[in-house]
Length: 237
Image 1 (cartoon, rainbow, N blue to C red):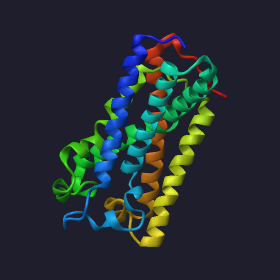
Image 2 (image 1 turned 90 degrees about the horizontal axis):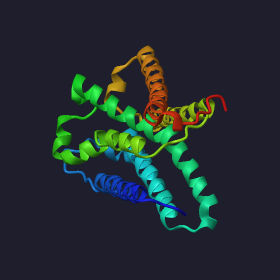
Image 3 (image 1 turned 180 degrees about the vertical axis):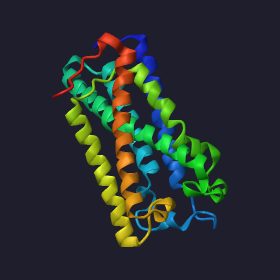
Image 4 (image 1 turned 45 degrees about the vertical axis):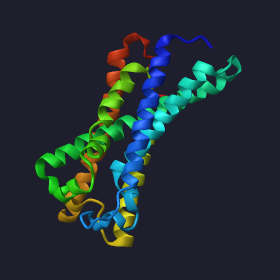
């Protein structure tokens, strides 16, 4: 395969991002109860009930796919081009349908709620448990990495119906997961949900899904804006 120095640089960036995301997950899993950690960390579902943690796993998978794709392009033979194309399709779909909208939503929603009342989303006592760098790794650095990915690699977005269907399935699955945890363990994943009545809960869910949907459109728009005529769009597939 014909490759240039740009791909080698991108490969290094993907490798660094993959290591960073993996390190943050490992450090998060290494957190132990020191009397300050909220008890819900160790209840049903563990860390997997938090969208922040799920998102970090998604970001790690994304950059793992990106790194694998780069390595095949750099060192793979011509016989592997077909497999490499499949990896590119997987990378583009994973970025557009899950990684970008979910990652951007996590950053925006976390800091939005944090600015309003941090105790609703990230109690002060967590400062003694979770290192500052890890908090920003999970809730801040995600967005710059996604934007860097967007501007360094062109992503072919799927048809909007397919893209929104995939995102919708993810949102619905996470909603069911939260309700299941409430049913089994009797706790809401996030404390502020317990303060809402039924109407408020419905409004929150609908607004969250609408925001996530518009973030999908934002990723599509930014890709088209940055890459211009090189973007080939399949809006209705």
